[in-house]
Image (tube, rainbow, N blue to C red; front, side, top):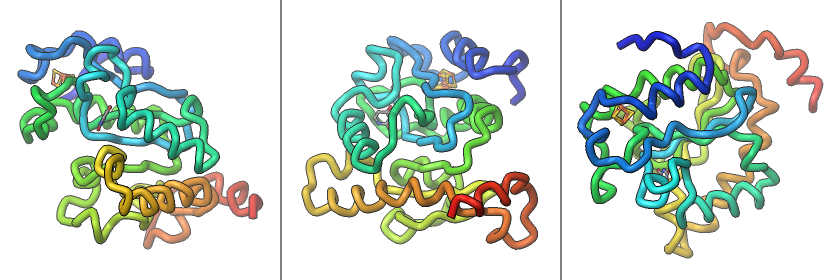
Length: 208
Ligand code: URA
Ligand code: SF4
């Protein structure tokens, strides 16, 4: 479904905040459009707002968000330089998984955010956002490996909430995070068979 007047990220956020296109609008406190600079090179996609995000209208501000910030810092990344979004913009009741109809109704906003930001790397957090790009994969097999999709890299990782209380998973998620900066110098257009784009290939390669 096309939504008019989504020429900027602010337009998208405004549309999201007044959206009633799925039943989640009825139970939300605040919609959570996502946040970050329009020229972000890295975009993170989570599942959907939880309790704290619904309260504040901002993504990843609860315990999973604090862990995400620690992982970003450990990898040498700044939260205010990346864009953080979710598959659905309103909190599913009791943090249940979003339903297919809800994701379908909401995908126009995320798709437009991806178009407007045009990030070099999309990091999917958890199996749910991974399935947007790799529907039949399992997270345990797909995580930690970036693959070219439409002229950019998509890098699936575990959800920080899954690793938060499990020490045996922490090393893995940290390792996966530390690889993110290196992905910015890879060139999807070169790797992708018959791929297009890559207009700044030369610039990227000169960074080695
Ligand atoms: N988990 C998510 O997937 N997204 C958030 O914004 C917060 C927690
Ligand atoms: Fe609209 Fe998405 Fe919120 Fe559903 S989850 S009401 S589609 S913004």
